[in-house]
Amino acid sequence: MSAIHYSDMIKVMDSCKYLESTQTFEMKYMKADEKRRTGGQIVHVEKAQKCGLPYHCSDNEMRGVVNLESGLKTAFHLRLVFEFNKMTVYW
Image 1: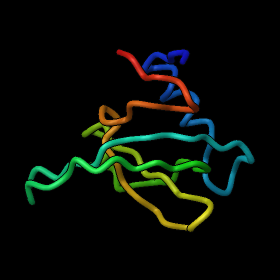
Image 2 (image 1 turned 60 degrees about the vertical axis):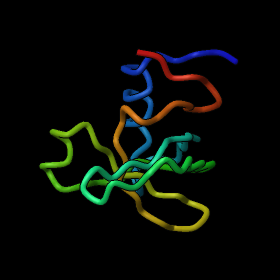
Image 3 (image 1 turned 30 degrees about the vertical axis):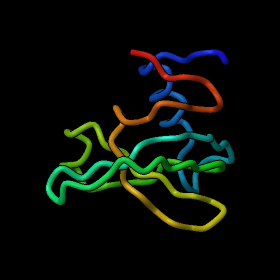
Image 4 (image 1 turned 120 degrees about the horizontal axis):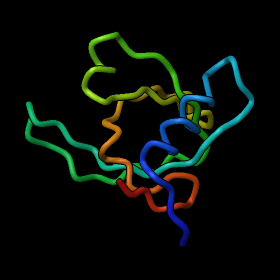
């Protein structure tokens, strides 16, 4: 399996904007919620685009993603993405 650098992943992700672009991406990330002390589930989104989040979330290295197959919008932490477009993410 090939690899992609964290900063390159962000550039590709930011170019796939919801309702503005036809490009999509695939990713796997792990859920985590420190306040509720839950997480650990792996989420696989096969066809996604980036969507907006409130301004304070971008300071915490978070992004929003729309699953185009289900229409579900979800926020996730960028550091918890471990696979992007079938490539391993490294720092």
